[in-house]
Length: 350
Image 1 (cartoon, rainbow, N blue to C red):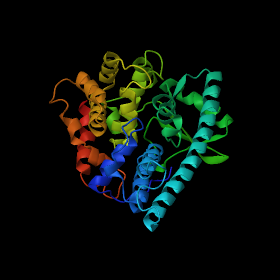
Image 2: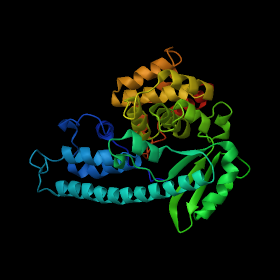
Image 3: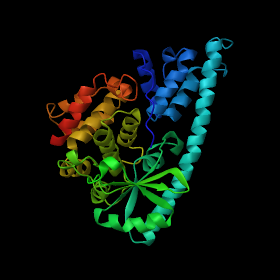
Image 4: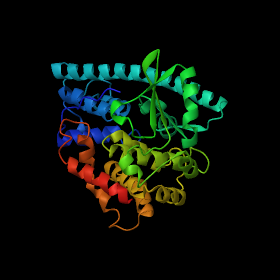
Protein backbone atom coordinates (compact mmCIF):
# COMPACT_ATOMS: atom_id res chain seq x y z
CA UNK A 1 0.00 0.00 0.00
CA UNK A 2 3.01 2.24 -0.38
CA UNK A 3 2.69 5.31 -2.59
CA UNK A 4 4.17 5.29 -6.08
CA UNK A 5 7.19 7.54 -6.54
CA UNK A 6 6.30 10.03 -9.32
CA UNK A 7 8.42 9.68 -12.45
CA UNK A 8 10.28 12.52 -14.11
CA UNK A 9 8.14 14.50 -16.54
CA UNK A 10 8.22 13.34 -20.16
CA UNK A 11 8.68 15.57 -23.17
CA UNK A 12 5.86 15.85 -25.68
CA UNK A 13 7.57 13.22 -27.83
CA UNK A 14 8.06 11.02 -24.77
CA UNK A 15 4.35 11.27 -23.93
CA UNK A 16 3.44 10.28 -27.50
CA UNK A 17 5.78 7.31 -27.25
CA UNK A 18 4.36 6.20 -23.90
CA UNK A 19 0.80 6.25 -25.24
CA UNK A 20 1.89 4.39 -28.36
CA UNK A 21 3.57 1.55 -26.43
CA UNK A 22 0.87 1.31 -23.72
CA UNK A 23 -1.74 -0.25 -26.00
CA UNK A 24 -1.26 -4.05 -26.09
CA UNK A 25 -3.35 -4.30 -29.26
CA UNK A 26 -2.12 -1.15 -30.97
CA UNK A 27 -0.08 -0.81 -34.11
CA UNK A 28 3.67 -1.14 -33.84
CA UNK A 29 5.07 2.28 -32.90
CA UNK A 30 6.66 4.26 -35.67
CA UNK A 31 10.47 3.97 -35.76
CA UNK A 32 10.52 7.77 -35.62
CA UNK A 33 9.34 7.49 -32.00
CA UNK A 34 12.30 5.34 -30.97
CA UNK A 35 13.86 7.03 -27.93
CA UNK A 36 17.50 7.75 -27.47
CA UNK A 37 18.80 4.67 -25.65
CA UNK A 38 19.77 6.84 -22.70
CA UNK A 39 16.10 7.84 -22.26
CA UNK A 40 14.68 4.32 -22.21
CA UNK A 41 14.94 4.09 -18.43
CA UNK A 42 12.79 7.21 -18.05
CA UNK A 43 10.11 5.87 -20.41
CA UNK A 44 10.09 2.51 -18.60
CA UNK A 45 9.70 4.24 -15.22
CA UNK A 46 6.69 6.12 -16.57
CA UNK A 47 5.24 2.92 -18.04
CA UNK A 48 5.58 1.16 -14.68
CA UNK A 49 3.80 3.99 -12.84
CA UNK A 50 1.00 3.91 -15.42
CA UNK A 51 0.57 0.14 -15.09
CA UNK A 52 1.50 -0.58 -18.71
CA UNK A 53 5.01 -1.97 -18.26
CA UNK A 54 4.43 -5.36 -19.97
CA UNK A 55 3.21 -3.85 -23.24
CA UNK A 56 5.88 -1.14 -23.04
CA UNK A 57 8.71 -3.65 -22.71
CA UNK A 58 7.52 -5.56 -25.76
CA UNK A 59 7.12 -2.47 -27.89
CA UNK A 60 10.37 -0.84 -26.80
CA UNK A 61 12.30 -4.03 -27.39
CA UNK A 62 11.07 -4.00 -31.01
CA UNK A 63 11.76 -0.30 -31.40
CA UNK A 64 15.33 -0.23 -30.22
CA UNK A 65 16.43 -3.32 -32.15
CA UNK A 66 16.84 -3.72 -35.87
CA UNK A 67 15.52 -6.57 -37.96
CA UNK A 68 18.53 -8.73 -37.13
CA UNK A 69 18.00 -8.36 -33.40
CA UNK A 70 20.84 -5.88 -32.93
CA UNK A 71 20.31 -2.51 -31.27
CA UNK A 72 19.08 -0.02 -33.84
CA UNK A 73 21.39 2.73 -32.62
CA UNK A 74 25.16 2.63 -32.14
CA UNK A 75 25.28 -0.77 -30.51
CA UNK A 76 28.72 -0.14 -29.05
CA UNK A 77 27.87 3.14 -27.36
CA UNK A 78 27.49 3.58 -23.62
CA UNK A 79 23.98 4.94 -24.18
CA UNK A 80 22.93 1.81 -26.07
CA UNK A 81 24.36 -0.38 -23.30
CA UNK A 82 22.42 1.65 -20.72
CA UNK A 83 19.23 1.25 -22.74
CA UNK A 84 19.68 -2.53 -22.98
CA UNK A 85 20.44 -2.71 -19.26
CA UNK A 86 17.26 -0.74 -18.47
CA UNK A 87 15.18 -3.16 -20.55
CA UNK A 88 16.80 -6.17 -18.87
CA UNK A 89 16.10 -4.70 -15.43
CA UNK A 90 12.49 -4.04 -16.39
CA UNK A 91 12.06 -7.61 -17.65
CA UNK A 92 13.39 -8.96 -14.34
CA UNK A 93 11.07 -6.69 -12.39
CA UNK A 94 8.16 -7.86 -14.52
CA UNK A 95 9.09 -11.51 -13.94
CA UNK A 96 8.83 -10.94 -10.17
CA UNK A 97 5.53 -9.11 -10.67
CA UNK A 98 4.14 -11.99 -12.72
CA UNK A 99 5.07 -14.44 -9.99
CA UNK A 100 3.46 -12.23 -7.38
CA UNK A 101 0.27 -12.04 -9.43
CA UNK A 102 0.16 -15.82 -9.65
CA UNK A 103 0.32 -15.94 -5.85
CA UNK A 104 -2.44 -13.31 -5.59
CA UNK A 105 -4.60 -15.39 -7.94
CA UNK A 106 -4.04 -18.41 -5.68
CA UNK A 107 -5.26 -16.51 -2.62
CA UNK A 108 -8.17 -15.07 -4.60
CA UNK A 109 -9.24 -18.64 -5.32
CA UNK A 110 -9.01 -19.49 -1.61
CA UNK A 111 -11.18 -16.51 -0.68
CA UNK A 112 -13.83 -17.24 -3.28
CA UNK A 113 -13.95 -20.91 -2.29
CA UNK A 114 -14.37 -19.96 1.38
CA UNK A 115 -17.15 -17.52 0.51
CA UNK A 116 -18.90 -20.13 -1.59
CA UNK A 117 -18.77 -22.59 1.31
CA UNK A 118 -20.26 -19.94 3.60
CA UNK A 119 -22.99 -19.12 1.08
CA UNK A 120 -21.66 -15.60 0.43
CA UNK A 121 -22.10 -14.55 -3.23
CA UNK A 122 -19.34 -12.39 -4.66
CA UNK A 123 -17.20 -11.65 -7.69
CA UNK A 124 -13.56 -10.88 -8.35
CA UNK A 125 -13.45 -7.47 -10.03
CA UNK A 126 -10.97 -4.96 -11.44
CA UNK A 127 -7.33 -6.01 -11.88
CA UNK A 128 -7.42 -9.81 -11.70
CA UNK A 129 -10.70 -9.99 -13.63
CA UNK A 130 -9.47 -7.58 -16.30
CA UNK A 131 -6.22 -9.53 -16.73
CA UNK A 132 -8.10 -12.76 -17.30
CA UNK A 133 -10.81 -11.39 -19.61
CA UNK A 134 -9.62 -8.25 -21.37
CA UNK A 135 -6.05 -9.04 -22.43
CA UNK A 136 -4.68 -11.57 -24.93
CA UNK A 137 -2.32 -12.71 -22.18
CA UNK A 138 -3.08 -12.17 -18.46
CA UNK A 139 0.53 -11.12 -17.85
CA UNK A 140 -0.08 -7.99 -19.95
CA UNK A 141 -2.25 -6.52 -17.17
CA UNK A 142 -0.48 -5.93 -13.86
CA UNK A 143 -2.28 -5.79 -10.51
CA UNK A 144 -1.05 -5.61 -6.93
CA UNK A 145 -4.03 -6.82 -4.90
CA UNK A 146 -7.27 -8.77 -5.17
CA UNK A 147 -10.63 -6.97 -5.31
CA UNK A 148 -13.81 -8.83 -4.38
CA UNK A 149 -17.27 -7.29 -4.67
CA UNK A 150 -19.99 -8.58 -2.36
CA UNK A 151 -23.51 -7.49 -1.46
CA UNK A 152 -23.85 -5.06 1.44
CA UNK A 153 -25.97 -7.41 3.63
CA UNK A 154 -23.18 -10.01 3.48
CA UNK A 155 -20.39 -7.74 4.70
CA UNK A 156 -20.63 -8.79 8.36
CA UNK A 157 -20.50 -12.45 7.38
CA UNK A 158 -17.11 -12.28 5.66
CA UNK A 159 -14.90 -11.61 8.69
CA UNK A 160 -14.98 -15.20 9.95
CA UNK A 161 -13.99 -16.59 6.56
CA UNK A 162 -11.17 -14.08 6.10
CA UNK A 163 -9.69 -14.71 9.56
CA UNK A 164 -9.92 -18.46 9.06
CA UNK A 165 -7.80 -18.02 5.92
CA UNK A 166 -5.13 -16.13 7.89
CA UNK A 167 -6.08 -12.56 6.99
CA UNK A 168 -6.23 -9.61 9.37
CA UNK A 169 -8.29 -6.46 8.88
CA UNK A 170 -6.28 -3.28 8.29
CA UNK A 171 -8.01 -0.07 9.29
CA UNK A 172 -7.03 3.50 8.37
CA UNK A 173 -7.01 5.87 11.34
CA UNK A 174 -8.43 8.72 9.24
CA UNK A 175 -11.38 6.60 8.09
CA UNK A 176 -12.78 5.89 11.52
CA UNK A 177 -16.44 6.85 11.71
CA UNK A 178 -16.76 6.95 7.91
CA UNK A 179 -18.02 4.15 5.71
CA UNK A 180 -16.00 3.77 2.52
CA UNK A 181 -17.66 0.42 1.72
CA UNK A 182 -14.20 -1.10 1.49
CA UNK A 183 -12.26 -3.39 3.81
CA UNK A 184 -8.56 -4.17 3.41
CA UNK A 185 -7.45 -7.61 4.58
CA UNK A 186 -3.73 -8.41 4.83
CA UNK A 187 -2.38 -11.95 4.96
CA UNK A 188 -0.73 -12.29 8.37
CA UNK A 189 2.08 -14.51 7.12
CA UNK A 190 2.78 -12.26 4.12
CA UNK A 191 1.45 -8.70 4.57
CA UNK A 192 2.05 -7.70 0.94
CA UNK A 193 -0.86 -9.98 -0.01
CA UNK A 194 -3.88 -7.71 0.13
CA UNK A 195 -7.53 -8.60 -0.48
CA UNK A 196 -9.96 -5.70 -0.67
CA UNK A 197 -13.62 -6.45 -0.02
CA UNK A 198 -16.02 -3.93 -1.56
CA UNK A 199 -19.74 -3.50 -1.03
CA UNK A 200 -19.81 -0.43 -3.29
CA UNK A 201 -17.33 0.53 -6.00
CA UNK A 202 -17.94 4.21 -5.23
CA UNK A 203 -15.94 4.67 -2.04
CA UNK A 204 -16.04 8.41 -1.45
CA UNK A 205 -18.88 9.36 0.93
CA UNK A 206 -19.09 12.72 -0.87
CA UNK A 207 -19.71 11.10 -4.25
CA UNK A 208 -21.82 8.21 -3.07
CA UNK A 209 -24.80 10.48 -2.49
CA UNK A 210 -25.03 10.89 -6.27
CA UNK A 211 -23.77 7.53 -7.52
CA UNK A 212 -23.47 3.94 -6.39
CA UNK A 213 -22.33 0.65 -7.94
CA UNK A 214 -23.03 -2.48 -5.94
CA UNK A 215 -22.86 -6.20 -6.57
CA UNK A 216 -26.40 -6.39 -7.96
CA UNK A 217 -25.64 -3.53 -10.37
CA UNK A 218 -22.61 -5.31 -11.82
CA UNK A 219 -24.65 -8.49 -12.18
CA UNK A 220 -27.40 -6.59 -13.99
CA UNK A 221 -24.88 -4.97 -16.33
CA UNK A 222 -23.60 -8.46 -17.16
CA UNK A 223 -27.06 -9.99 -17.48
CA UNK A 224 -26.34 -12.13 -14.43
CA UNK A 225 -22.60 -12.63 -15.12
CA UNK A 226 -20.04 -10.34 -13.46
CA UNK A 227 -17.42 -11.46 -16.02
CA UNK A 228 -19.62 -10.45 -18.98
CA UNK A 229 -18.09 -7.84 -21.31
CA UNK A 230 -20.66 -5.15 -20.47
CA UNK A 231 -20.15 -5.64 -16.73
CA UNK A 232 -16.39 -5.41 -17.21
CA UNK A 233 -16.75 -2.15 -19.13
CA UNK A 234 -19.00 -0.67 -16.45
CA UNK A 235 -16.49 -1.53 -13.72
CA UNK A 236 -13.43 -0.46 -15.73
CA UNK A 237 -14.84 2.93 -16.71
CA UNK A 238 -16.31 3.68 -13.28
CA UNK A 239 -13.17 2.54 -11.47
CA UNK A 240 -10.96 4.75 -13.61
CA UNK A 241 -13.20 7.82 -13.68
CA UNK A 242 -14.74 7.81 -10.20
CA UNK A 243 -11.97 6.19 -8.20
CA UNK A 244 -8.94 7.74 -9.87
CA UNK A 245 -10.10 10.57 -12.14
CA UNK A 246 -8.37 8.70 -14.99
CA UNK A 247 -4.83 9.49 -13.88
CA UNK A 248 -3.25 6.27 -15.23
CA UNK A 249 -3.04 4.92 -18.75
CA UNK A 250 -3.87 1.46 -17.40
CA UNK A 251 -7.44 2.62 -16.73
CA UNK A 252 -7.84 3.75 -20.32
CA UNK A 253 -6.38 0.53 -21.70
CA UNK A 254 -8.90 -1.48 -19.66
CA UNK A 255 -11.77 0.61 -21.05
CA UNK A 256 -10.44 0.40 -24.59
CA UNK A 257 -9.98 -3.37 -24.49
CA UNK A 258 -13.52 -3.83 -23.18
CA UNK A 259 -15.02 -1.51 -25.81
CA UNK A 260 -13.14 -3.40 -28.54
CA UNK A 261 -15.08 -6.50 -27.61
CA UNK A 262 -12.09 -8.53 -26.42
CA UNK A 263 -14.30 -10.21 -23.80
CA UNK A 264 -17.36 -10.29 -26.06
CA UNK A 265 -19.86 -7.81 -27.47
CA UNK A 266 -21.02 -4.81 -25.45
CA UNK A 267 -24.76 -4.42 -24.87
CA UNK A 268 -25.00 -0.63 -25.15
CA UNK A 269 -28.64 -0.51 -24.07
CA UNK A 270 -27.97 -2.51 -20.93
CA UNK A 271 -24.89 -0.39 -20.18
CA UNK A 272 -26.90 2.80 -20.58
CA UNK A 273 -29.73 1.55 -18.36
CA UNK A 274 -27.49 0.44 -15.49
CA UNK A 275 -25.23 3.50 -15.75
CA UNK A 276 -28.20 5.85 -15.52
CA UNK A 277 -29.70 4.07 -12.54
CA UNK A 278 -26.32 4.08 -10.76
CA UNK A 279 -25.74 7.76 -11.54
CA UNK A 280 -22.48 7.10 -13.41
CA UNK A 281 -23.45 7.89 -17.01
CA UNK A 282 -21.17 10.93 -17.09
CA UNK A 283 -18.31 8.94 -15.58
CA UNK A 284 -18.67 6.09 -18.08
CA UNK A 285 -19.02 8.50 -20.99
CA UNK A 286 -16.00 10.54 -19.91
CA UNK A 287 -13.85 7.42 -19.63
CA UNK A 288 -14.93 6.21 -23.06
CA UNK A 289 -14.32 9.62 -24.64
CA UNK A 290 -10.85 9.92 -23.19
CA UNK A 291 -9.90 6.34 -24.06
CA UNK A 292 -11.13 6.87 -27.61
CA UNK A 293 -9.12 10.04 -28.07
CA UNK A 294 -6.00 8.62 -26.43
CA UNK A 295 -5.79 5.43 -28.47
CA UNK A 296 -7.72 6.50 -31.56
CA UNK A 297 -10.39 3.87 -30.91
CA UNK A 298 -13.69 4.68 -32.70
CA UNK A 299 -15.60 2.02 -30.78
CA UNK A 300 -15.01 3.93 -27.54
CA UNK A 301 -16.22 7.17 -29.10
CA UNK A 302 -19.25 5.45 -30.62
CA UNK A 303 -20.31 4.00 -27.27
CA UNK A 304 -19.85 7.39 -25.59
CA UNK A 305 -22.12 8.99 -28.15
CA UNK A 306 -24.80 6.33 -27.63
CA UNK A 307 -24.70 6.79 -23.86
CA UNK A 308 -24.87 10.57 -24.07
CA UNK A 309 -25.92 11.75 -27.55
CA UNK A 310 -25.93 15.48 -26.75
CA UNK A 311 -22.55 17.15 -27.54
CA UNK A 312 -23.17 19.63 -24.71
CA UNK A 313 -23.70 16.81 -22.21
CA UNK A 314 -20.37 15.32 -23.27
CA UNK A 315 -18.44 18.53 -22.58
CA UNK A 316 -17.25 17.55 -19.06
CA UNK A 317 -15.38 14.65 -20.64
CA UNK A 318 -13.37 17.15 -22.66
CA UNK A 319 -11.87 18.52 -19.44
CA UNK A 320 -9.39 15.65 -19.52
CA UNK A 321 -6.80 15.04 -22.21
CA UNK A 322 -4.26 12.32 -23.04
CA UNK A 323 -1.47 14.66 -21.98
CA UNK A 324 -3.11 15.24 -18.60
CA UNK A 325 -3.34 11.48 -18.08
CA UNK A 326 0.35 11.00 -18.89
CA UNK A 327 1.27 13.71 -16.38
CA UNK A 328 -0.95 12.04 -13.77
CA UNK A 329 1.86 9.87 -12.38
CA UNK A 330 4.70 12.33 -12.91
CA UNK A 331 6.31 15.07 -10.86
CA UNK A 332 4.38 17.51 -13.03
CA UNK A 333 0.95 16.10 -12.13
CA UNK A 334 -0.19 19.40 -10.56
CA UNK A 335 -0.10 21.06 -13.98
CA UNK A 336 -3.70 21.21 -15.09
CA UNK A 337 -4.90 19.35 -11.98
CA UNK A 338 -7.80 21.81 -11.76
CA UNK A 339 -9.27 20.05 -14.79
CA UNK A 340 -9.29 16.72 -12.94
CA UNK A 341 -10.86 18.32 -9.88
CA UNK A 342 -13.55 19.98 -12.00
CA UNK A 343 -14.25 16.67 -13.72
CA UNK A 344 -14.69 15.01 -10.33
CA UNK A 345 -17.20 17.67 -9.32
CA UNK A 346 -19.09 17.26 -12.60
CA UNK A 347 -19.49 13.52 -11.94
CA UNK A 348 -22.01 14.33 -9.22
CA UNK A 349 -24.42 15.43 -11.92
CA UNK A 350 -23.90 12.36 -14.12
